Length: 102
Image (cartoon, rainbow, N blue to C red):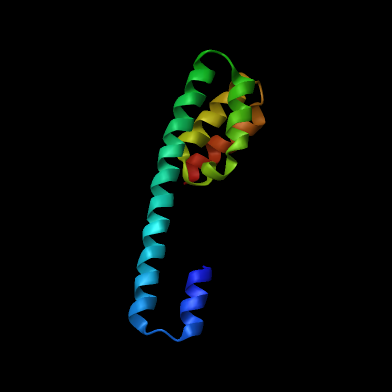
């Protein structure tokens, strides 16, 4: 962002600003791909915990990475199943209902 400000302040032409926009878009795409990879990895670990009956560990792990839940129905589904395993039925029902609405 500082580079963008410096370029703008120096009054460089639009070509440079366009190049900066392209670089920023590429960086955003890379972050998006990294998040998809992170969700996949997290999902695998959570599933292993859940299948081995380690519901509390799985819940803690998901709560650490809550920001990934926003765009992942699969992680939300796993969290709901974890809540069922922990006998937190009301929380599980809330998530299942939300998933059905989306």
